[in-house]
Length: 132
Length: 285
Image (cartoon, rainbow over all chains, first blue to last red; front, side, top):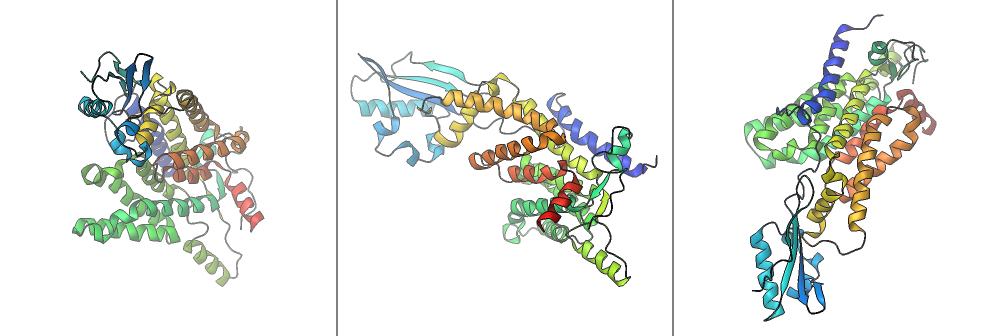
């Protein structure tokens, strides 16, 4: 059989680079930037948090729409960047404004969890009244 | 024009009796698939990179030189002028951009969709990408006419298409491997992704959001594993190609994936029998 050697060499080298390169990066912990790992959108959103605000009443906890309480514009009228709460300080600032809007004696609680590579990580489960 | 099929070298393999190495590197087929890949990939390269390399962005001499190399090589590649040389030049320029300039000064060039484009173009010299729909082809036909000979066949070794198919399958496989974790399969990572892009920190109130993300996550991973291997199986292509295209259409619509979806769609040509593509074009021409 007459297989052109240069073609064979190029094929084997490129096929090896294409197919085994990502394995070396993703399984063996290789770090060179010249071999690509195919990891898409792994970190997107993992810094974001799911924060739900509740007003505790005698009838139970009522989930609040913070946009309805704080202003009259619906949530989608605000840029998505401003809708993301990514730190404790940002959450407490929203809680402070909600407490002000709800008035004296309000009991505000939050469920909060944040993203990670392994999924949600719970941070708060309505333990404390944030208006105190 | 496609020459008479020599039989023993038909894509993707002539029968199981042929040695594997022969099937891989000696197979011949129509050059039209490679030509369509050349044109499609080059247009996607322009769509993604051309704006970044405009002189108005940067007047640094090195940047202008990079831009000149990019525009000249990709123009020649699109037109099919000395196609293989143009492909080497364009591919080399893109590899320098993605692996050299990117990490140093242009982080967006290091993303997966830009790397995929660069690698795909860099593989084009291994294909007969100038054998059809090109200035090269025009010249070849003109030379033959002057000599009183019939036009040369649009036929050449197509082992480079295998490399492009491997590249596409590898993207699916390792992307699926990365997602094969509880964090993704539970739907949690899709929830965070959706919230990051659309709603911020306010968990959607509509019923079934968590279940929908869980089902979508599992379906995505299963489909990616199926596409990685199944696109090589001729009998599965009628089902898997539409499924894959639908998946990429959803990505394109719902996520800021830039040229990724369209690049993958164009690369599906690498899985198809080039002679079947040729005949299909003839049927509709």
